[in-house]
Length: 461
Image (cartoon, rainbow, N blue to C red):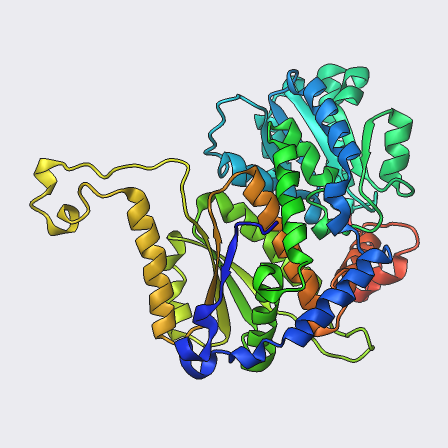
């Protein structure tokens, strides 16, 4: 089954944007097939597991049962995590229920709050504004030892225990982590927390359809069956060896060609839906951390990867487009469009305003018409300025289409990794900073790393 989400790359071609565009011959079907076969081998060998997630019905059922039991007791779900452990759940929540703090939820499901930073002002604000007696805590870290997550956990644990006691707090805390190792696994067992697991072959930025994303989604009333149905259909499309029916591969080829053949080292993701704004930040990590690599699989220094930038339509037409139209031509722009909004508004025909030309031509029109016209105009202006741009189009934003879209983007990323010849599933570049931070905080075994910030070997209080 083909997933009804379309990818259009017409405005990336030389025929549309001149020498800054690509030729159709730059999109090599053989390279595409080799990338698909190479990635398929990694999945079949057990190296990479995210394509298998929609097959795991048992985990989805367990998540739904736990969420149903707890949901009636709480009004807030406080998620403690960072990176893929936070961006995915936030993206799902805002895509379905709307951007924080303006959300539409007729079912009165719990609200999701994401504590993904250790800024003390930020953490204090959460504790001052949430009611611990009506809060559940989702504690998520695959490694089981993420400093940011465990530090906020210890603070939140004390806050929760003081309010409702240790026994009741234990029932309100659920852990999502590795099933074999890590301090969080040991803590969860000792404290008897409900625990869900992240498969060993699924990395954090690809984990949105594990309990990392499914559990907060279910607790907040999202339909995870519908979500996984979309994921399943996207899988079918993404494994297609026919390029015309594989939008993830089409997009991967276009991105790779614009980078390697036309020097478009920056991708601007222009989300034309406020509901997709959180998704742009999830994608930003997926694209940056997966493809930004120093060496390829042969050990050669290559420094690959595009820099992803998030933009919101129409808001950022008034803050960023000047640069994109007239600044350095080192970017590609990817539009995320939605055909059908959930609701629409009609601009009133108000008599006293009709004498003003700037109001008269708008009167009586649908707000969605203006919204779409502004996206189309931005695409046209960029094309006129010879700035390559492409577009993903979703029929609408609901659980099915979000599940499908996210999975297409994950496949696109995996295919690009094969095209670049790099490992899209590790992140060695972030490890050194973690070790230095551990050393500065006085963690045993990391003393030597503290010296990298200066001559003093002093622990930070």
